[in-house]
Length: 445
Ligand code: COA
Image (cartoon, rainbow, N blue to C red):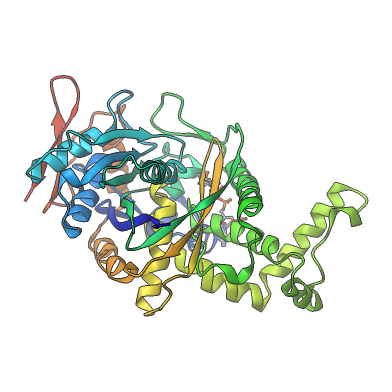
């Protein structure tokens, strides 16, 4: 059966940067190592005055379409995944299509447009929808454009303020893709949870510590569900494992749990036993509390083993490069984790066509999804075309006062006049509101 999956990826970062260990921590009176070592974050990306989820998504999409030589007629579906929508009725995909129609000759009149919502997992769900649409044979030889775009801002003073970010990932989903083929098998872990939500409000209500626990629980269930259809997952099965990355420290916790799971009842567990003992089994303990304590001790010991550290350095660490420089991009987050891994592979001139990735997405509320992806022959050329390193280098570095101003600019309850810190060039820009309170955009040469 012909593969269906990701044919191209483009990434667009907000044009501003907040240095977390230096600028943010020092004003907050915090130790910079909370960011560098604890959360694993160097900086957050922010949108300038003229940027928002539409401009970032449209910029990534334009570049993707131009690079692939596509016209609007080649796209049969545009889905936007976002947690930052500003309109309860008109989907962000219509705004993005409107932007693109300013620069392409034709229009997207016959494309099916929509918007996907389930916190950060909705980017992956939109990819899923595109996959199913193509597999069902309803695409008329056209590809799907999936855009995950967010401005992840928290209320000033909320602990989540440490993990903000803004950017977009555009992905072309097609038959016989150049980059990655998606597995039919998927696993889900999904429960009604109250860890992070935005009930008719711009900034989230967050129970941060609980959201970390919910993330880990739903991920474990999704992995077990995936294994129930795809068979057991072993250490050597996957070249990289990109996880949803609200901040790299979260993935450090998830990686450790995943490693314990995939090595249980294997030769690796036996080899590690000489150093740190075998994994605790619940039936060996008198109470659940004693078992939990034993698990904690085992995990602490596992974290320090050479075997685990080397697996983490090879399979997980390369997925965190972009995230550590941009913060949380919500729906785009797992997709920049995947891109980071592939960019590392390209830098290392790795020849890994046919190898697999285990991709683990998560959205608060809460749902985790896990599936596998297979590297296709054209991956390297596509990945080398991504210029995110350059974009990150070119960001304007905000002072703390400037950060406060830009937070106010993007706070929908505030009406403030702030001059842009950068000038738009070769990109879409927000230009103000129209007669029905719609947002207006222009392409700036
Ligand atoms: N050196 C090294 N590590 C340090 C440190 C220092 N000086 N100071 C703190 N840390 C570590 C902490 O031990 C902690 O790591 P741990 O969780 O492994 O123990 C980490 O840095 C974060 O510190 P903490 O004090 O817990 O930060 P916080 O109270 O600001 O909360 C979040 C962190 C993630 C809960 C908060 O940023 C948040 O609510 N984020 C939004 C929700 C989110 O992203 N959830 C994730 C699931 S989607």
